[in-house]
Structure formats: C-alpha cells, structure tokens
Image (cartoon, rainbow, N blue to C red; front, side):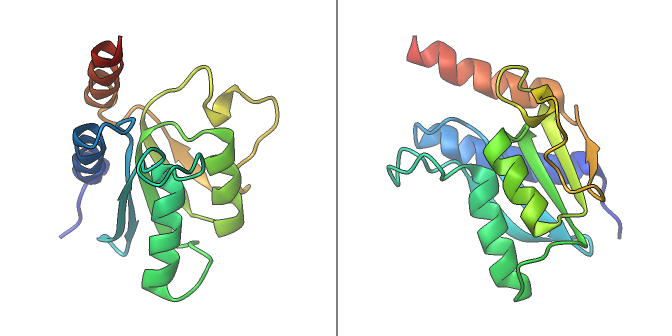
Length: 145
C-alpha cells in the first residue's frame, strides 16, 4: 500500500500535538523510507534546554540510527513547519531525498534565504495540510500571550 503526503503529514501533526502538550513549540516531524515511518520526533528545545533540539534534528538522528548510516538519500522528511536555516543545513549533510512541509515560515524558514541551503538533489514540497499545521502554531502562541 502506498500512502500519500497528507497521510504522513498527519503523522507529523501527531508529533506536533505531543510537543504542544509538553508546552514546546508544536512542530513535529517524521522520516519515511520505503513508505514506512522510520523516525518520529517533535521539538524538545525546552525539555532538553537545547536550542538545537528542533523536531527535524531529532528526526535526522533517529533515522540515521534506524538505517545504520548518516545519509538519508532515499528518505522523505515530513515536517509541520518549514525548516529553519539550521535544519535545512543539516538536511544538506544528510542528503535527504525529499522535504515536505506544512506551514511556511516567512521569517525564519530556509526559503527566505537568498542562497539554496538544501542539497541540490533534494526535492521540496510545501503546503501539505498547511492550514492544520498553521492553526496548531497559532493556538500555541495565542495561549502564550
């Protein structure tokens, strides 16, 4: 059975909701290989007191461990928010095959940069379940104000 981008983004949203419940910025990520989730993660910056503990970074580490190697060429990252420059830069080194994100991040997302940060062979798709992903972030930050 082949699953859609929406199916896997829903899995990333589940991770984002876990982050929300932990009072972390609600960003979730899953990494898929051969139509199977091999890594799940969410933001842990508050929990770990680590500014680099973004969902994507946690997912890259878990996926590399799952496949027994650092290159994720045949994998897809699904993440609820457009990766920041740090996470996009890390994706370059993983050589991930595809990045699929939900909500855009016009202030801090990698696409706001003037140079391409991603690996040249990485395919990018944005806007998958964008409204659902953005709504969770809006609820979180409204709660903080």
